[in-house]
Image 1 (cartoon, rainbow, N blue to C red):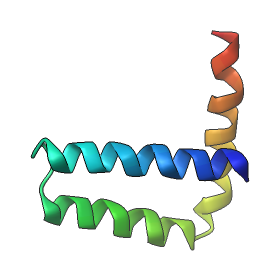
Image 2 (image 1 turned 90 degrees about the vertical axis):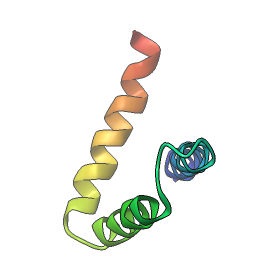
Image 3 (image 1 turned 180 degrees about the horizontal axis):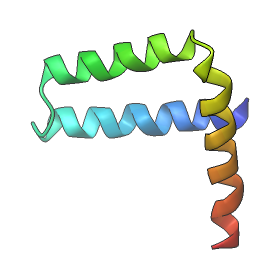
Image 4 (image 1 turned 180 degrees about the vertical axis):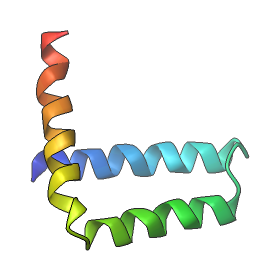
Length: 62
């Protein structure tokens, strides 16, 4: 759970930076947020969480 909250903050910060640098428009940001929101409520949510956990656990070994 701690990893999920940290990744949510990280991705939120990246989205904020992209909006501030005008690299990403407001419409695209809305689509990205809504995609993540709806993806979290599908059966793919467990797979995405497992993938992100595997990546986070592999980072110290690099």
